[in-house]
Length: 241
Ligand SMILES: Nc1ncnc2c1ncn2[C@@H]1O[C@H](COP(=O)(O)OP(=O)(O)OP(=O)(O)O)[C@@H](O)[C@H]1O
Image (tube, rainbow, N blue to C red; front, side, top):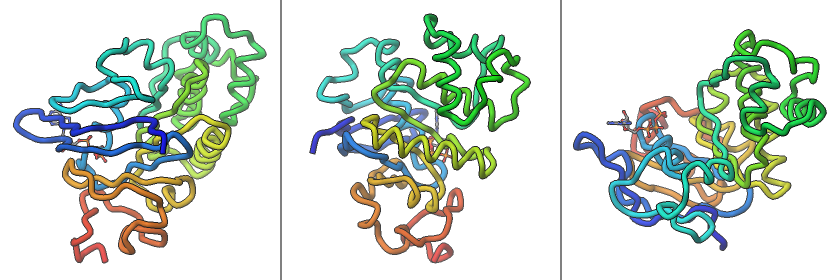
């Protein structure tokens, strides 16, 4: 299997706590990989390491065979785009936001990006901070796609969104993956994992507890399991069963 990201002994320690503890795993270079686990299990930290927003205390990450520590973080982030739980729009209009990622973007190109995330091209001249949370998140996704990234990382990107916006983002993720742009998607929701993911990485207290296909997850966590309750995602937690 070709690895998109290869994590070797990845450890992140802060204030005597191990946010990630000796995680060794290869994230496949195809499809959607869901990163799951209870609140505080280290999902965001893992994703942030993949984008050089966080530095490991020990271990290494290779991106398509090249050690991330050897690269330029800004150049990497154009190739490995990331969207976060809370959308952050820049001052100015929608097209200003998109041009922050690609200064050469034409109005037609910008309209095309908006249509990919289910926003109307009429929104190009809207003041970005007047958008609803769901619209702002879609704009952030369009902005992330403006650099034509090789990979999309999404950290709980739909957790504050309504069903319509969630469905748009999920569809986009699976389409991106199907057209050669792998997606790594942090989620609390087993339903969402089942809808979009091909592969899963499961963390528990900073440690890797499962990596593989969705169908191979243990019954408690696998297809059909109920939604995760933050802080209650442990296979041996009888309250969850
Ligand atoms: N800079 C830091 N210093 C100390 N502890 C931190 C720091 N950043 C995160 N943590 C702690 O590390 C743990 C892992 O955090 P992380 O955000 O990676 O988990 P998560 O699985 O993404 O959680 P959630 O699902 O709630 O977003 C948490 O207990 C968090 O409080």
